Amino acid sequence: MNQRPRIKIKPQPFDTIIELLAWVTFLLLWLLTILYYNSLPDKIPTHFNASGYADGYGSKSTFFILPVIGTLIFALLTILNKYPHIFNYSVNITEENAYRQYSNGTRLVRYIKFSVECTFLLIVWSIVQSARGKSDGLGVWQLPIILSMNLLPTIYFAVKSYRLK
Image 1: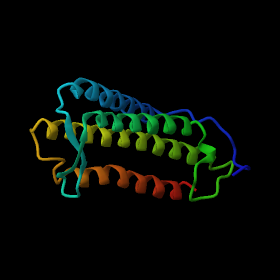
Image 2 (image 1 turned 180 degrees about the vertical axis):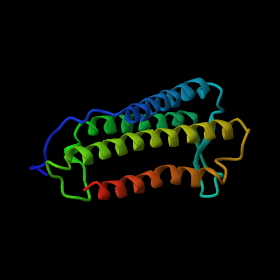
Image 3 (image 1 turned 30 degrees about the horizontal axis):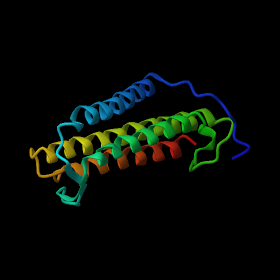
Image 4 (image 1 turned 120 degrees about the vertical axis):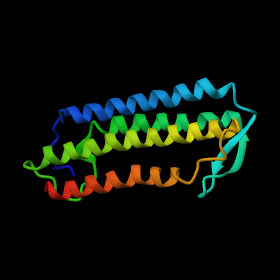
């Protein structure tokens, strides 16, 4: 890894769009949390089972846990994306393939950042709806959506990395 070239990756238009979507989702996560906090009951759902039903409850102050974790992940991934030479790649990085591999790697990190924020936003919205009695929980459709949104692109970018070698 010490031998890897250190080059600056210029974001392409698609990268800028993903980054912008991540920022918008991040801001919406906080906006939703702040807007709905005072209207929540003192006891809110804090955990949902695999079927999507609330099976754990806690103080409404725990409502801020997801946005705080989302902020930490967002910040760490933003910082990490400035150092693509330290990423774990499935192929050997050379001078010839470094730019392609780093571009692919930074795009993956941007997408992960966006999908994590979307996941937290979806869960916060579900907590609000469940706490206010407007839904029973996450619903059966959210787990497959969250898994697909996070796993399929990771597989796609891993295959693309292998093909770019």
